[in-house]
Length: 114
Length: 114
Image (cartoon, rainbow over all chains, first blue to last red):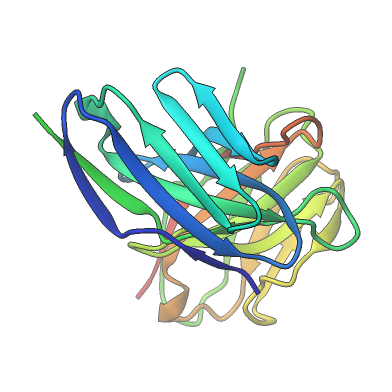
């Protein structure tokens, strides 16, 4: 099966930079996703990596190293509204299809202080 | 455009009862996924459909859980003889099957089994 590991909690102050790490073990890797989830709401898509390297998207960047089974999400210029749970998810190849299920980590609860 | 919608938003039932949870995916999305999420955990995969057929149902915990998508659009998750351990938020997601193929999540149905 898959094993997704990420820290449970992190705190940071407004304007700072925070890096949320994720390590994974998977048998049929087909991409890594980061989702943001505010309390009581649905997860919303943030970023996607399938090749090694850094993907930048405004204040958010995500990095992937497939050989190390490692990813991180980098959040810059933190704002109070960034307080949320950040979910790392690995996509599996599924049964003979390019589509596949997502395996989620437990989520990292980020609290941004003023 | 309209996102993924789920009904009801909340469902309270008694142990042993039958429940149905409905998901309306984004129009034109061919893939539909069901997950459930317990407090402090990431979403846990249940089943996914490609069109009308269940492409992967390996996440269904036991034979009390069943899902259908008869016309390749709306899906219903059915739980028989509910147990207190079934209490969770049930999330539905859909994806286009193209490009990054990120999954778009609905707001979820909070199921409470008394």
